[in-house]
Length: 300
Image (cartoon, rainbow, N blue to C red; front, side, top):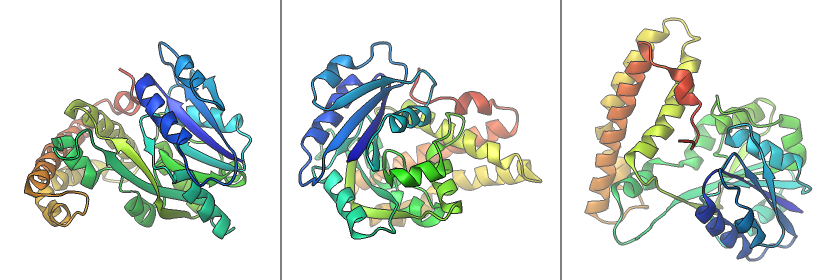
């Protein structure tokens, strides 16, 4: 049995699209159950979940995708746990590829897959779609360099999850924390390029800024424990501000963009985001409220 777990907060239309993509899965050799864990929506997605067979709806009042996923795990019966976010769309053979990879090797206990941008109009990308096509959700790189993958496209044997322990709360980057805890315990995360989901790009710069506020606040909390942290942190912020030209080759040779216009948009996105991140880092170094920023998920 495969157990699919989906944290949800105020995204009923996106959840319907996600569940539709799961209903359309092809080539899966074993049954799978789906658990949606609502994390405090004003109107729980009861009607959406009722529209699909074999979908259970739970409620987790503790804020954060980590606690929501943990509750889903606690109510799951499968020997394979699979995580996807409510605003994502699974490729039609997503579960079949996960099943195949685990079947091929008993030594593989944790899988991370490819996350691509879900375009509204593939012929006319927005600035944020172009930027995130290159710079967001670089799971292969995260796995190779930092030993973790994003929890929006993660599969793990249930026995392995039990050994590693639950996801952390909203005050930490729960995907990185969990993946690196797994690595310290001897569990490697393997990248599976055929394990594909599609994630929509942010609709506005404010949404992307909120993401970087949270991640920067998490990094800042770790930095503060090191000697001479302030000078090093400010130096790092300067490096971030000066870094966009170094990304020209990555943008120019990316196979996820087509045409000069899309590549220009991606570069403009890099400049905007890196300058914002640099300013945010300087603000935190001199008294900014890191705890408030790290406590955000997608709550308003």
